[in-house]
Image (cartoon, rainbow, N blue to C red; front, top):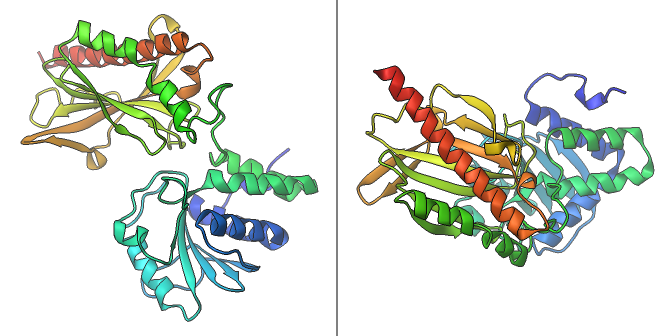
Length: 357
């Protein structure tokens, strides 16, 4: 059976979703109240009675906000992101819009991705963010359960909208048994952090690399940094990504391995021919690994003192391909992933150099 929200639309996916959300709330005002209650409670504010939702309310000048939740005691301006990044000083400009309103108006950001918010916005009294979590903004996976809650009404419209949100990767990540609270519980995160010993041992015995914890993510999990495992690979950085990334075929959340090469190294362009590839982990032990190259204009940099290196490629594997109740099995899988990434990177450079001769 076809889903009415996926029959085709004009405009951007982000704008279409926002218009669809307004339509669903219009038909299910309890959902609007639930969203207001959730945002307020998570931000440590008092709840208020919800009146209506407005799609793309009137802004001022170049400031066009996505959504407005009109309420009794205050209003909430919402900026929606699905896969796009924030514009230049976007939230700073939108805070000024909130300040200009005669009625008390808060601003919040709801996104599929992770965004770094400037301190001036984070500290502003009109910016709504989760108070007791380290996230700097709300996520669509926070809103998804509120929509699913409405499905008890057994209405096809709300059921199809929930399916549409899942299609847009807005549902919370489904993690395997024993790890379901990985992104919320620091104790569970620490358990995973202790499973990297075999990876550490490999790089210390097989290469001249320095292995060290980089920093803890906002989820409490440690990111790992492998420095200079050979003469051309400046940095191999293992990180975690809990949200869906556009263009990837693997199930999220992911473990991500980023490759950095010195800015003036002749191998800097060696990964450009890949663009997007999927390959099996060594011995087919844990399934597929997906690799994408950095788009030049968005490539990131790492700087240490006077040294600067460019991010050239990222390798991904679904976290569920790694996790298991047996921690020794998790250790083995992490090592298989890390070794497969390293060997694939070596092979990529070898093929590039052979073509340059």
